[in-house]
Image (cartoon, rainbow, N blue to C red; front, side, top):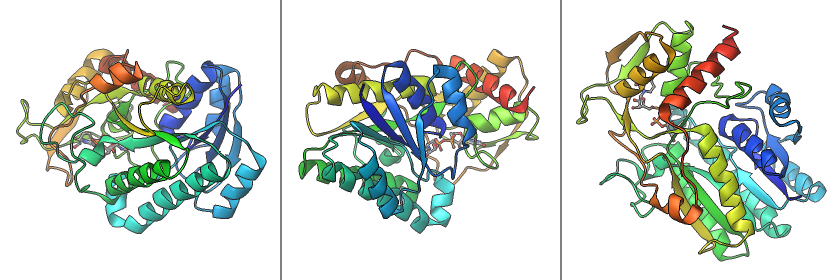
Length: 338
Ligand code: WQD
């Protein structure tokens, strides 16, 4: 049984990926520093799959702790989620983002070289494309100067990985997520933002649950059909499944180069106002919202061209945005006990 290290494995996308890995027969060990995740997620994963992953509370900036972990644990592959990921926070505190996201990555890759771990999946983001010149976005679209240190840290990380793969036997796949939303059908795991949610869907579900007075829609004067921004909202379970497929591609050496990139989206764009309407339709809840000023740094429209992931990865999304919104609501209700 192959053993996979999942860093950030108690987080939102990480925990959903651990579930899919276990259900595909992989053994999983998690490293998480619990800075943006709760230890209770470990028991919740076990409740879903019947298997409790091994867990180590480690801050990946602690080079010595990382070295000790790899001395004591042998793994066949790594899926690296652990990173700081709030766009706004990264603008206020860039060095936190460069230290955490880049030092952690370098220490992990050094251990891959030292212990001949040759399979490395990286959690990246469509934010590396900035404001695209054309839509839908393919993997060949130019990577533009990121508007945030968070996005820049993802761009630099991909370059670090590519250079390392060229200088060693490591093969890697970088998965560029569009907008992950929703939760596992069990409502045992889901998105649990600390403090006021930055992202749209958790703010919607918290508003519907009565935790927030109303949703602020950041602008309806964009050059889009209804004036609000457009994004590609992908069900987190579809996203998690893509990580397992990507890992299997590396193990079976079906990759065409030592560093591949795939866009993970649905290929469809939805506006903020369309998401609100869809949420109201699937839940029957009227969502209070108001239109406010634009949020600095927002791009107008971004959604994926999924041809490469569909053809070469052999993966496509199976769930609709409506299913994702319904699952997000079920999760919110289970968290709030409503
Ligand atoms: C979506 C749309 C907002 C909140 C970011 C990162 C990306 C990834 C996902 C980490 C935008 C609007 C939002 C609200 C709103 N993060 N909105 N009111 O900004 O597309 O992507 O999060 O991996 O890398 O860039 O996602 O959910 O914040 O915003 O109107 O209260 O919803 O303006 O148009 P975003 P988001």
